[in-house]
Image (cartoon, rainbow, N blue to C red; front, side):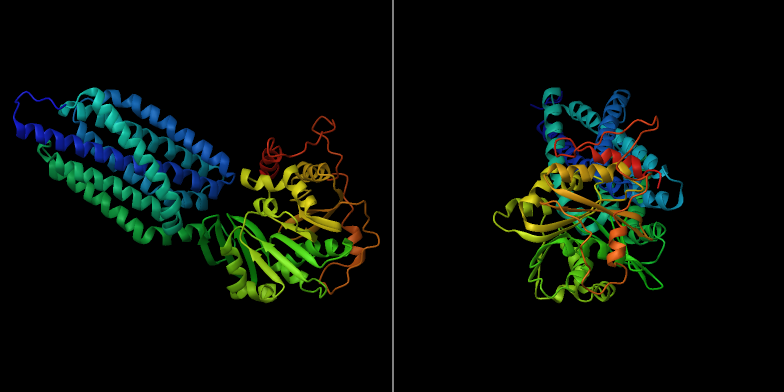
Length: 527
């Protein structure tokens, strides 16, 4: 019920309209708030890695900021609408330019400043968001709505808006506009709501034109950010890569970057180098040919990952392979391998081979769905286990699926990060493969653009590479070189000790206990 001393029906109607305006404003700014919250997690995941960690930190900091803001709001007792308007202005400026500036910080300032900047902005925007609701509740109560109703209705608008914001970010904003433009667009909504409320409660302000003009200036800055910010941020991002960027795309799954300089083509996924055309043949020959050489037959081959088509190029050297099934989650990577001139030249039109069948699916789910299909050779060419979603592809459960789909006498080759840079991670992966009741052989190869890189060859039966022969033409790999790849120096072999000289006990990596993520992050921190 709405209360008024005058008892005039016009006043009652006016109070109802004003309170409804507050509820609408609450719902819309809550949509913006949740979008900024997940946006900060997404950009942190892209630039800083480990998506679970970044989303956890940003959401925690945002909620902590909201708590701080709610506490601060107790001191805001006068000029409630004007306070709300300027809070929205501040959110517009700070959150709107947040991702744009973060790319600049990452490109030009020292390591660690990008994380400090992101977490600071997250906390500040969270605090400003936390001030919004108490002010709106207090204003609704001031208008004449009972405290019980004003609180319930503002909170309902806020929570319902949160769901809408999350859905908008996932299905529209991020895929269609990217991280930089999304921040500017959402900030424009914040400022537009502030201007609407400012006009709606115009009679409450003595210096209306000043406050309105300030909002218009901020709005124009944000519009310029929409028009030109992404291009400038791209120049910032260019600083993160050694060579000029010739292709970039933000897909539903990852950021794809292709660079080229003096004939050297490099592919980056979420900022991580996947290959350099100068030396990728060392990696892909080691990935493919030992597994083929050690398999009893090779009619049916499965490749998990490898959407660039470079592993397919090596497989096509074998005429007796009847079918090659490539499973890659992101169709955009496969399309790049099929259509981009530089990649097509590098993979020698691999996807045009009629023996190739492409499946755009999650590798784990693909194997789970397969009931009776067996493969003579399985190549696991997946990114390193640097986050939770990738970790599942390095677990006991995943390797058990590989074993269950491996034909008798067949071979599995797994890329398993660097035994030099991440020694404990490499040998933990090896132990996990063995825990799936597979016999293993360990290999590592020097790839200049990567450094020393490790692989794990696995079979159901005991085996030796002594009699394995490379039967096709290669640029790097020979029978003698293959045997040499199995030799590890004392500093990177499986006998790992800690700083006190005590033996380190390796653990099996599972879905329930993802032990290698933290080890991986710690190991690569120094490189």
